[in-house]
Image (tube, rainbow, N blue to C red; front, top):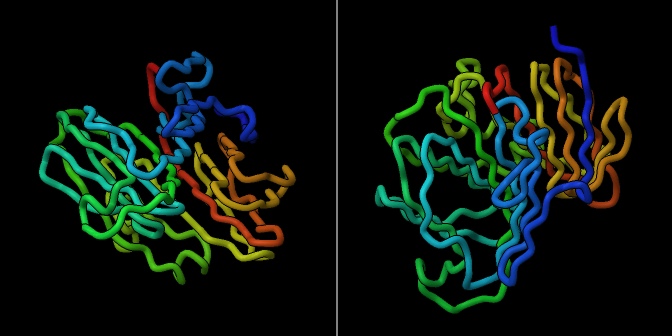
Length: 255
């Protein structure tokens, strides 16, 4: 039986990749950053907080057997892939790419090349999260759907899920029946309760919160819960907070 644990990971403790065009903070081992004791939590292998300067981005690169969910906080990100999908991801638009048997894609901060119009100098800020699918070798796929801001402000909203209990409410489907991603935009003083699950991952991409039983968390902080849940989160002054919560009922074996 798993022992209940609440493991706080502060922003300053995260791995960081800082390039001329990219400022990326990694919750888990990623790229040349490797810690054998920090490779995943539950089914979540990657949770990267990325800021990409205008006119740059990730050139075409491959993925395989991975469910990749992107959540933009500010600006816009152009996605193009080898299956023919091309689109603009912006705040409030949930996007999922299933790499499956193999896919090539690029992600760039150059919306003017896709839509025309003037160039801009605004960075794009987004969180990208990877989980393993529950079946390898599936066909590659892509889905995106806009999530109403008012809905996000009412409390935790399921934005991506493979779980049966969310089949009528989730925005986008992911290929793992044991995982779901929830999001909320909380005004100062607003409070929500976390779901209960064997594994939870809470990330605070914006603002400040108070986590019941733990205390204050700042922007960029994360918490890994094992065999626990139900704690309340309250947004602090002055601007409230945005939170991302992975609910997971299984873990990765062999990582």
